[in-house]
Length: 416
Image (tube, rainbow, N blue to C red; front, side, top):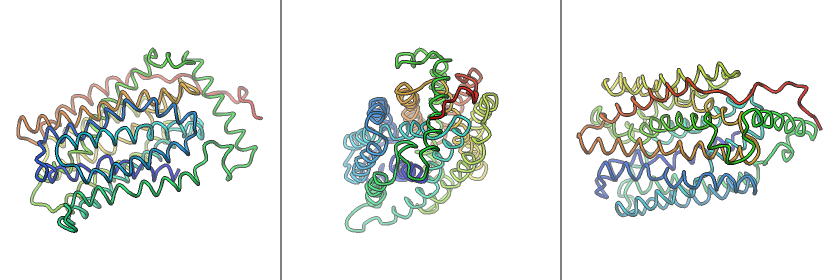
């Protein structure tokens, strides 16, 4: 888990660090808020289109090799963001970065399903997703410091930020290649009996869930109304999540005359609360009824947080964004347990990628709409009302969520 969390920390910093550079990119490259929003969001279009092929490849070649490949390519491309010259190159590099990173998130979620039974899966997902919170807690302040290097070596501060934050992915890739086991029976820290027992219990749960839901083949995924419901909820969640990730530094910048370091520190505050949400709430989702209650209340919490962010000043607004962030990772690990109770084998790998693929279009929609509304109205916060509306729709959709099957009884488990 520490390796997976570290990978997600670096990945999230590299995909979202343009939030700290937004104002500088607009000045140095002449980008409009709409162009910035398109560039921030277009990452998710190519990322989404490459998700399912990437996850199916990982299912065949193994997580260890494929995660290493992903990290090397995205690290080099993220560092290459330092050399964008205008809108066109900005769009191209963001699209390439999306292709390179595709498959990491659903791939790791799939890997987690091979290591944790359903009872503990939401907790494990929460631990992994904690990496996103850590990334924003440390990434924004680090980005603020790196922006102060403006002029060093003839480079802008944002260029130094992309280079310094991009290259560590390449180093971690080789550590993962050496240390990450693909499955329990490959792990040196488990006995053979322990590993085989764990794999048998997980396989029994997968087969029972897939049989109950009728999802034994890939084509069944897109016909499953519950999985489509998960996709729709995830779409609204991602609109809110990436609106905050890409536009919070700009919104905080309107609170007064603040330095890049001060903006970085203030934007880290909501993500501290997101880490608390990831650590405390998902572990409570031990039953289907609890999971449903958590998904509904957390979506309402996100909507309430953005409402406070839209109407409040510096103090109330930051409290609102912290409330929204707390609920981001309280919801997501639980939401991802739903498809894992309805799929198995290659359909599980493809199904998780499908959920992430379609849902991530919210990652394009949120930043694009925020940038468009900012250019149209001249306000940096008016777009938040769009986010509030989408989150309320997401809360209503959670009322229809159902798991694939009951917990597998011990007598159905075969231990080798």
